[in-house]
Length: 337
Image 1 (cartoon, rainbow, N blue to C red):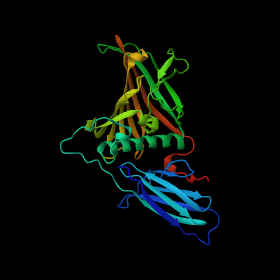
Image 2: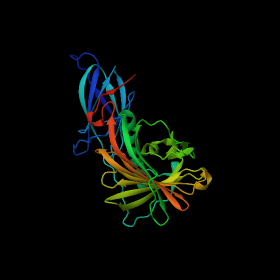
Image 3: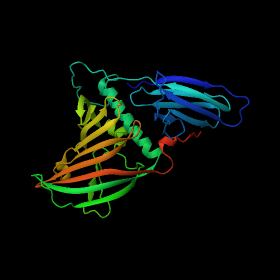
Image 4: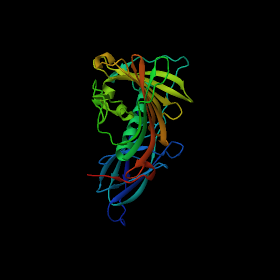
């Protein structure tokens, strides 16, 4: 359940202190356990992660009220404000409250609902908010801690009988993490990369897309209960394009670990493939924990039927190089006014 509690913390002026005010925050659970890699959004600064011990700092350039939003998987959102009255340094402790999905003894699948029809406090609402937190964490990781990642790619084709033909292509490519190409409803194609024989490619949705307001407004979600998926137990969230989207888009399912609410898998299928002159396309993305509670895609498996053959593309994350510090180093936030 997303709870926007309002807490006002007043920081007293330290007469002996000189210069700017430095706020040192710590994020903990009700039992005092540090909530490492929580996300912190401070007015005038980019969203960031706390350290592995739940700590963060920011410098207030002048007296005033600074809004702070704190999030952690499995905990309610906390909206708070810090009022700085003068120069100095002070430590502030923030406590987040846990949330829980309350499954009935006999699970009843919650029907597809779109937009405002989602009921606050329902299992669907809670699971969708946790999915959105995962997506926001992916976006913060990519944009606030930019990195270069390398993918090993392999393209194969298989006959309907399962027999493989010679590998069409395999390579290793590098990409920047910063997201630039936002999701647009019913517009899932992009120009093919240089050197490709195809004239266009399908833009596979990323985890960050699931935090995009356009994606959330234009898809209907349903809560599918609990499933065993591989070696973990997950809450399943199904999604499909809203009825007014007639162009090809994506439907599928997202799987959140019941123990941590961390994203584990997303499955996509293209809708209305005939309108894109393709038979079908399915994609499965598996996520791996890069930092505690911070997931990054690890493998991507795509299958496109081509009549007698299936074209199969596999991608695997093989390297991540941070350009200006990682979440583990927890750089200080810079606030602008």
